Length: 149
Image (cartoon, rainbow, N blue to C red; front, side, top):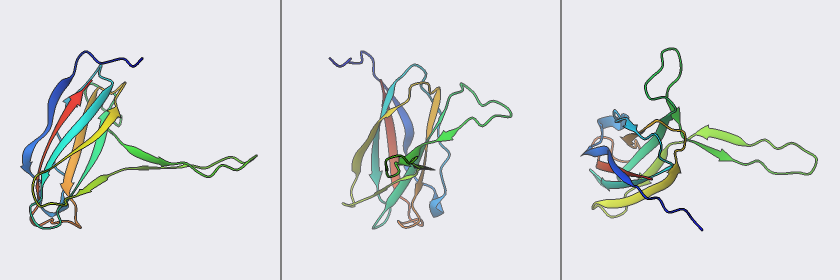
């Protein structure tokens, strides 16, 4: 039997606003999330020009506040498992990850991302930008909320 969460909190991760010009990462809002296990991100994107694309990357912190002399933010990563061969160690690859979404309809497009496991995370933030291959001179509008459980 699956445990059903008894409490879900919805928070604004990024208020609806136009992304920065020239593919600059925006200033992300820190969201406190201690005690939650998962988050689902709900994103609404309206392209500013034809062929709009936005990027985002998730950063998390195990600390309730930045700690002097210690890296406080850690970016999501992706792992590609290496090929398995009998009697040989396997080398897998890990790299920091950005996620891109390209608009298809020219209207408001709603997507979800997750669920993302956040056990042990005290704070999180999503950095966002208009992708350089999209329309960096006419960036789109992006709104993100997170449902925490």
